[in-house]
Length: 150
Image 1 (cartoon, helix red, strand yellow):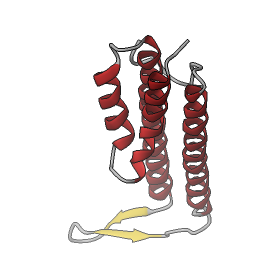
Image 2 (cartoon, one colour):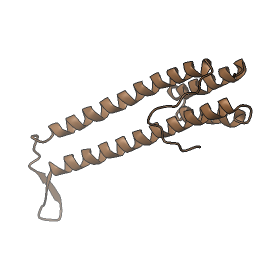
Image 3 (cartoon, helix red, strand yellow):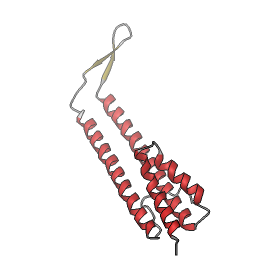
Image 4 (cartoon, helix red, strand yellow):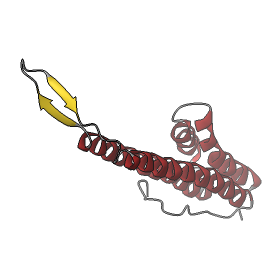
């Protein structure tokens, strides 16, 4: 049976990840700060703090991979559509820029935006859900989370 103080602190720890909308990297800094200050007080706080930090680190990694992949595909698709030719005097001349394949750029952008929006919506909903579970004294495991901190 968890005390009300531990439940409230675990709930605050989960909700502190929403500070990302006010402070850059607040979703990592504030949960880590609260967890590091109170992890020795309760096993419940320690467990839920690790879950919150692991979830935020996992989302950061997923977003980073999504951005890198999207940028590389965008650059490859753009460069594939441009024909570079060397002009007399050593200058490059861009010829035959075809708009036929440019729709792939639009599709890549749309897919990347949809995935990014879906990640943010899922993150918001899961943070609220985890905080409700913690306020009831239940432990919560975030889905698709990599255990960076054990």
